[in-house]
Length: 145
Image: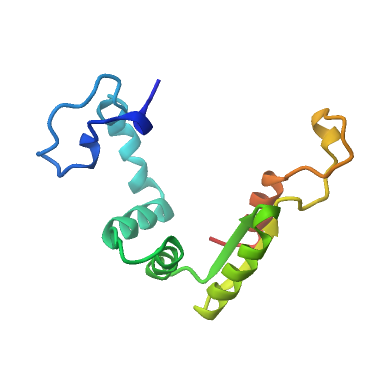
């Protein structure tokens, strides 16, 4: 129903009042958008995340990791949760080291946490499956951001 990845108009990214016409089926002009926007004032964390990301804006001279660190510091986060894929374990170790050097406490969980057999999902295999639900639950329980 929505096709933002293929949109050639991109009026949602333009300055308010200078955007012009929006394409048919553009989610930016949905009637329920007004109700959705009220959610920013309903939750303190959602508000802070939206506010800080808007203030920081793009800095095209820095990479994603640097921007993430800058964002986390601006939000006042101290304990970072890192859920990562097993194929990115070396990168996760590097990121953990960097985050700790920047003063963050880091909790990390590999995707295979829990060593759950794929038969849980009725798959005929003895291999452990990814467990993103456990990653989210455990990182939330560790009070990470």
